[in-house]
Image 1: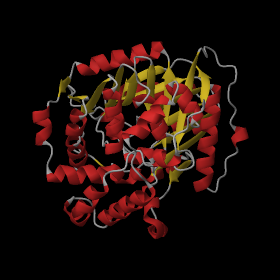
Image 2: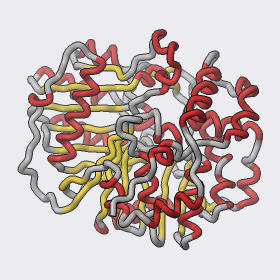
Image 3: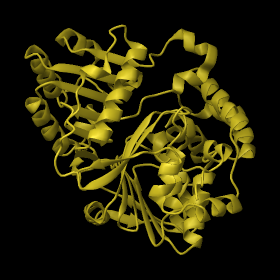
Image 4: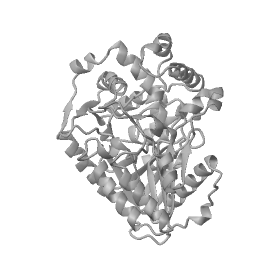
Length: 456
């Protein structure tokens, strides 16, 4: 039987308590953010409160009981499945950068690259130069970046790291800026927070890579030996590639007068080794509101064990309720966060929420990399076979304003690979107890926790 969560439930899956927001809105100015931004954040929080509502434990349980399997639930709620090959996984920025340069070299027809953050840095210059060489050879290259690329700061030196858009134009690489910051958006402030957080590459219509790695200093060069600890999943899937070519072209044409035609980008329909299925999340709220469905599939669909890996998670009470539902059914829930974020507000917000997770019975760990790398990975594994990689964070932004991409596999082979990676991460992780979690429950932590619901 088809079981679709009510629209009101899906929209309100992560909203924070109204009383908490009322208590702190007058004091948001104490957060050290640029002038004018507290107003934007406050107005957006009010906007979300007007249009969102919380869910009750009984509603969650009714959703779970009518779910069937997690994958059938996703399909019933608009997340399509496609034939695909098993992905090859790359787990560090340096490892992926090496593969990306190889993919660029092998490209014969076209490259479509959509990246949240791109900047001009010694670690990224080889990528830009390789793309320029391909343009000179007649290969069509199109790059899309979010305007957030202009606001990157080296956490160690506090120097601004230049965005790459103008540099690419000088190299002759077609580039478009997603949702440019402009005065016209002040008429409807939430538009400023519509960001393209996706990271994906498409090469010649044959291969696609999806994950969390940007082409910037943090992903590729902090620390220089590894960059971020993160993942890109590279695979073949004519259906996924066709869908994402269409998505890329539609987005490009919205912001650039050089209109692209989807029919100019062929997709190889004769790909080999399509021996599994993949579910594609290409979230664009509210047109394709898929992130909440994804979280419900994992938290309500898990039967025995759920692992959630996220550098810093700004979990709202509604998502915590979903974790509580899993724990109450005997599911062993493990959540891995990270040190070395290099961003004080982010770290305070993530640490503040640990106590809530412990109180509902989840196990929480903090990863500390030997080389001081940041764990930027977004990974969930349920029952050692349902696995998701992508750009989706565990927060309100990913459920609403941010565009996100993730791929879900229901395959024990990939589940084993993902669990092997988690076991490696756990060698450098420590469990957080309640005594430690209580130390993070400061007033400043609470302010940052609320701020990061929409800003992080």
